[in-house]
Amino acid sequence: MNKEQRAVTDSYSAGVYWGPRQESSEDCARRLAVLITALATVDPSFARWFQQGKSRKDALKRSIGPASAELESFVRQGRDRTFADLGFSLGGWNGAADEYEVSGFLIACGGYSEWVNNHCVFTLPSRGPSSERVLTAPVLTRLVRETAAAWEPDWGVAISEQHRDLMKPHRAKGAPYVGWVTYLARHRGRVPLLPAPVRVENVEDKGTLIILTPERFTVSNPEHVALAERVRELLDRAGLLRPLQPQK
Image (cartoon, rainbow, N blue to C red):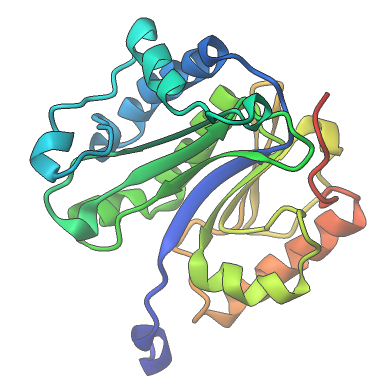
């Protein structure tokens, strides 16, 4: 690793995104139950989740489990009190004592106003044993896979924040980002042949995962950035990177 690579430390997030889609608190709770159950198999740091609290001690008393009745109550608490078509807003975290090992999620679901989009976004650990496990191609691939299977989004990505910032000026508003791991729903179209070492996997019959590289993606590696841009060009040429459209 050269001096420039050592000087830059990427931070990472993962999330899935979809357009207006009316769903009840029961619908959202069912999807969240599927996700929470699956997350426990992705990494040990995703095995427990807690609601926000006034303090860490308070939050650790408010666990988020897969029981449907409890989850539906949790979802209902996040209902927009003014406009029903804005859906539900939820948040949770994994209770890690070390701030660098914290993972969390923010969910907007059930919104069907033409002015909003829905999402399930994860913040990920930045240092320590959890980050060494989570910030790998196999674990991020599983995280995006399970999140996409649960929420059936339009697109999703696990991406370096530095790479996101690099791409933002050249991206059409609402279009998918192409990151370390990218998910595209099947209705977007067929994924073209992509250059090595890119790997493509199906997510049930719902969509496709595109994994750029088996090693950690960093913006300090010009080969990674060039590969991402090449893949973005090919996907765009195939019509797969259209801005997010409402789902009816």
